Amino acid sequence: MSTIFEKSFLMSLGLLSMTHEKAKKIADELMKHGEIQKDEVKEWTEKLAKRGEEEREAAQKIIRDELKKAIAELGLVTKQDIQELINKIDELSAQSKN
Image (tube, rainbow, N blue to C red):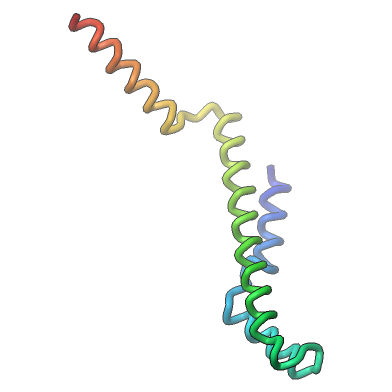
């Protein structure tokens, strides 16, 4: 499980921290160095910001999935487990009143 957390941490150092503002700065730097044209700055900014958001979402999914696995392995009670018990108690209570 630590491997997933390590990967998540490493991803966070890259595109996960890509905000629209940071993406604009990177695109501006690329323009200054002649690697992209001025009219491409907006497109590059949007692409970088979108990619950052996609990476954040992917990392969140990985973390959620790993937490679910850890909870299952440890045998911890979930909200769903508690709700199922409440429903069963309500069902038995209703049966006993009849």
